[in-house]
Amino acid sequence: MPFAARLDPHLHRRLVDSLYVEAMVMADEARSYFDGGQTDEVAMLEPLQRVAFTCESLKVTTRLMHVIAWLLSQRAWQRGEIGASDIISEKYQLGSAQVSDPAVIAGFPFAARSLVEGSEELYDRVARLEDRMLGAARGGHAPEPGPARALMDRLQISF
Image 1 (cartoon, rainbow, N blue to C red):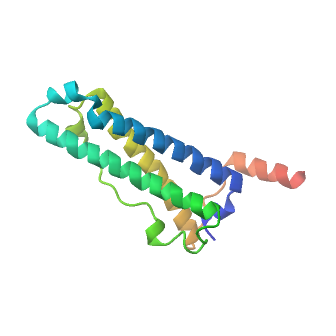
Image 2 (spheres, rainbow, N blue to C red):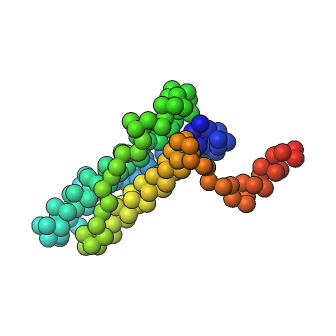
Image 3 (spheres, rainbow, N blue to C red):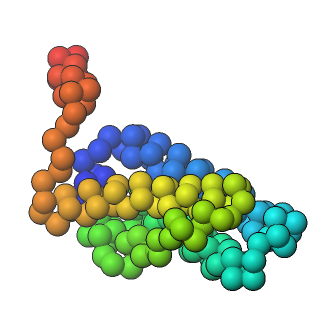
């Protein structure tokens, strides 16, 4: 049974929906920034930094597209379009994405650094969520509930 199936369906849906909105907003920001919103800033970079800037823009886009694809798969599973046994298959897993070198992005404009770091942070959060879900689905144990979850469970049983 997938880890998500053990979650409250509304909680899983809200989590996926909020991550999806965050990913789409960031993808729109990245698109508008990397598609020409930074021409003066990029023109001031050294030639090698401009090449690195282009590579980093591709990494940001790739990270975000992997996250969005994974979240859309989760939504399809919620709607019953993907079976519980299928959602753990490799084709529905989060794709791998390259990590950015902090030394390379250090010379980028603030907006570019923010997009790179933000996309890495979002990707890492979704990867941790997927790891927990896959670990539980493959026979691993779901993480112990925290004190708040334990209290909510006790209250639910009482009422």
